[in-house]
Image 1: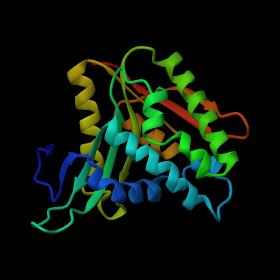
Image 2: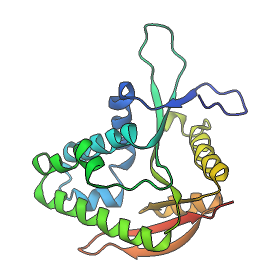
Image 3: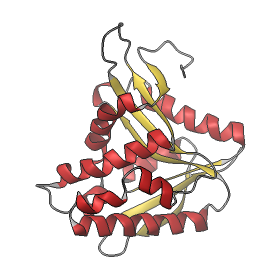
Image 4: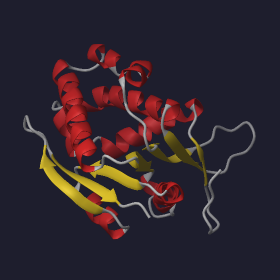
Length: 217
């Protein structure tokens, strides 16, 4: 269990299948307005429905293969723990190959989301992966998803999640890498020690994406 130095009203623990439904809800709420999601799922009337299918696969990946955590409010025996935040990371050296994608149901998305969304999902994934391999060929931590309940956004949860990412990188003397399509996120990560490696526009009418890195310490 991770706990911050200051006394907090929550605990951060390793994500398990028990947390999946709440994690999916937080990730959908956080990323549904992301330019990547809007491009990948262009119909606003069905976006949330199909985007949720994608996030379900991403959450399963985080549980099975990622280094993933949730922030929980205190709870009593017999109560369902309330998730107020989630963090999904990829550890250094992990490769999102055929078998992991098969196990988390990525290929089944072809039956669950519109064809245009399935095509754009795979195109975006391959495009970003190839770009990332060129920019950061050395082993590195990768931030995939971070979501915090809006009510607790200023309670220190996001800061503790970032501490987990930076501490893991510093202990292993490896870099951190992430990408975002939101300018305000770029400003935030610059403030905590990341820098922009490259700014790209995804082809096929895709969004502008910033690829950021924090060098190994």
